[in-house]
Length: 93
Image 1 (cartoon, helix red, strand yellow):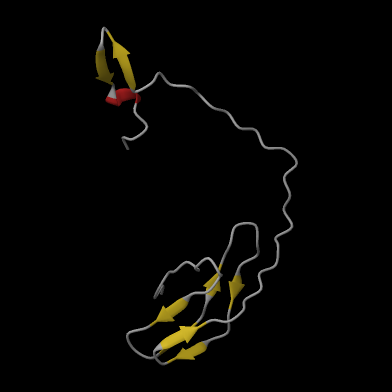
Image 2: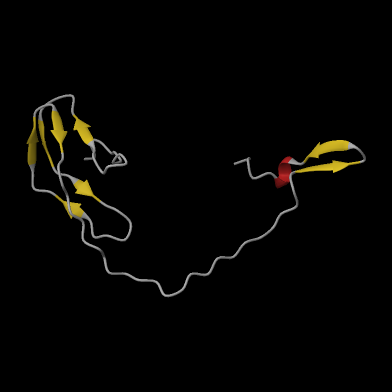
């Protein structure tokens, strides 16, 4: 059961605060590294995690291919008028 999901701050620190005491396991993952799973930890209110060392998964990439497509602009000027085309806009989801 997932209790809490969090991301570290810029210094790699994170804090886990629980509403009631419980025993937990930490699962830590990061792209390009093997995941880390802790032993069971008894937490009363807050868990402050010091250092966790992740080991590189050793996967290397020799080549990356990036393909881009240019769309017509979503805003243009025609006949002295500013025309917005939402169909071509990257701001719409």
